[in-house]
Length: 296
Length: 217
Image 1 (spheres, rainbow over the protein chains, first blue to last red):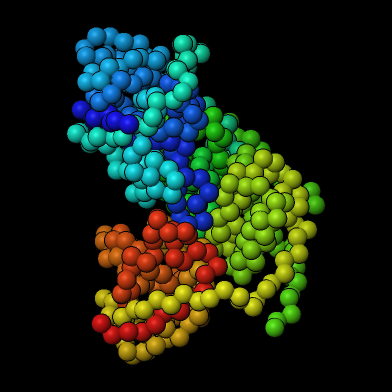
Image 2 (tube, rainbow over the protein chains, first blue to last red; image 1 turned 90 degrees about the vertical axis):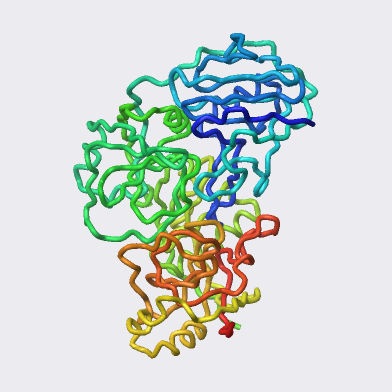
């Protein structure tokens, strides 16, 4: 056991593991890494067991000092990596000697880079998870300069001598997401599906781990002013408040909501959304809603 | 002993909530409670695998299911037995009726301010569902004539332990947060509501019976 020390926390760096699914009935958001595939891969390359806690940066990267020899993998959003000022590889295991300083620079594309350390990070846990939740405040607070975060014991298996298995696709200026229509499609005006299929939205700068706020054509409610009794919502839900400007809910989403959800994106689209910068254009490919009740 | 009642099952309507979710629209809060208990029982006996069961006001969300269409096909055929006899205990919450909106609520209810606490404490509540912040439960039970509108502009900060009424519900704020409900009382020890080192972390889980006990501080 030893620690990593935060030298530069960047605008927002949080600790993230697999989160705390299974507690939504107590109003506990799922949390966990926003871009699951990148987080998982970074951990794998660092030789960690599934689910280890890593640092998740936001746009500006972060800088850390190791207080023991540790292997680090910087994955997710591509960025310049240096150790004590010397260039090092992104997306590959980097050996960091005790006392050395690793800098993960600003994201070149995308939003969130992951710093996975062999042994994983062990900050304060809440309900079995080390993940920071921005909505509920559970888990450790976002990291600050000077924080010392405990490292777990180094894994028995050495880091894989491999490169990032595939070039990181990153995100383009425009994302097209499959949107599974429902559950509350019938709360929307009859032209809503058409609007969804042809509309283009942009990611607002008021977006975070809780959700992406989208700006574009308004999705109109069928009965403006009618209130939906609070109901459970899943990650990836596209919720539409009275303004008609949708919110795509991410990892730290509220567990229940009182505005109708017009459709839900799957895990792949949600990971891409986590790397979508403000200004990214979003389009939807609506998948028809199965009419389960009518078949019976 | 109450004879279990069978409810018409046609009221359970499964709606898709993404590739791994089913939102069961139950029509009423009462049916949603029965549906939640049925889902919990199925999960315990191994006939349902799901990550989360999330009750809402009149719905239950089943999230993290591999083949939602199979669950959806089953749901309309379910017969919910309503075990109205409650076997568990009741959580008592000692409160002092001293909230800043006590007089406004008295006026809305058409009673004297001193009577608000007597009315509120006489009701037997059930935690219908949780939401808003961890440990906050929407408590159901107020007769319709005591349903209360929310503030048009929510307070930016409501102290922890504030007991409030809003719409058909009452609830206790587990921590300081913004809030739009009418504040009528204060819980003496709000730290009980949420303790992540306790199992369960929330004092008021869905299905918990609750009684408010009037105390003077």
